[in-house]
Image (cartoon, rainbow, N blue to C red; front, side, top):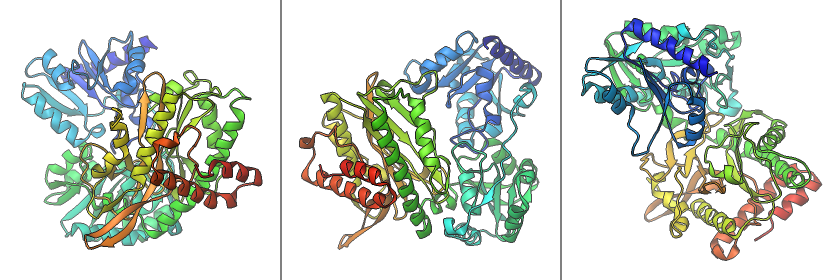
Length: 592
């Protein structure tokens, strides 16, 4: 394999030589800045042999390297060994940035190539400014991998389908009207949607082009009185074509968008900050381009009553699947050889038996003991640990149903745990409950609430590096903006109808990890002389294991919240369980 990678790098250098380039940058993104990248655009993986999900490769005429984050240091070190590529560990003080490294090894006047479709406008603008200061030129080229990657996978070709209004709750015509009204589009104006979840939401359509996300590869341009969907026409059924035409939506081939934008003159075009550079560049040639979040970003984050009812229904089915799984795991761990991957398959089986199930919503994180300390751990058959009837299993998983998307984490004691583990488990639970209990005034953003989940840990000198909560799409992406709960400033205001997770954690490197997560709905609270207040309603329905809790560490208010939550879980799930399952759940939800 190392010889194969060396040959691929040589092929890229041959392309560079023909184009007069001294370096080439290969990013890990696709034209739509998605979290999951279709194989067609996994060029960085192909040319370097490094298979982690995040990383940027830079190849020069006689050197090269890959920049990636701490999740992948060990993996990258092993996979890059013998290829001639160096690992650059991001966010370490001694690691130069890509621009710093290129400035150091290249000469003034040298050209650096990139594919404008697989990186964002923001990324290129930042790089260009830093490189031009030193006399280096950043040059957009055609995609070299269309020439040197002989068995390259096709752009996905799944057939999109129309999501029934009984699930979406709003007609596409209504959504288009709201978008046009929000942007005050005139005859010379348009908004270009490139984020696939925004397109799917607007059109009330879903697809299977993207792993874990029910999306289809396309662009959508909305004008004052018409719209155009750019998509591989072969993917559209007669029913889908008829549906789009009924809403005044024209259909063109996916690859025609750049030509059409170049032909457009004197228009005002709105684009998201995540727009890829090639599309932006085509539009900016003869038009005024306004970079700002589209109104769809905010519209889809606030769920309508049909979507909210769908979330509730999906959470009941997901809770039934989780209950059956947890009962099975408890009964099996001391009797059967289980691994991190085998339990993932069993959980998938339970979920797939539920009505309206379509897929998982992200790759399951099943981390036993020390693997639980790796925040984005993903087990493989080669790396999967065997489970023992002791210690903690951290299980973060979710599903896509036609009526909602789920995301839940539970830390499960498989047997005896240490006093340190119990204390950390209870600290995480305290933070989880304090945030879940929050009532906050209108105008609050997630950053202002983040401390509630951390303060008990901070008092013990403990912290975690990830965000505390993210939005969740409705049968869309499990990670949805613009709102979040995290330490760094995210100014998006929390509003009723938004879904958001609550997931504090503690991670002890090399020993164990603990995280508890529910998906919540923001709902109206009290109204006082100081204005309207909002609060969180728990959507996730699944018991939180009580065995590791140190009750003395919880306040009466926190214990009351937990008992009330467990009572709700039992009342909502029990009608759908067998007598044996009900008995198990009853015991798990008894008052603390």
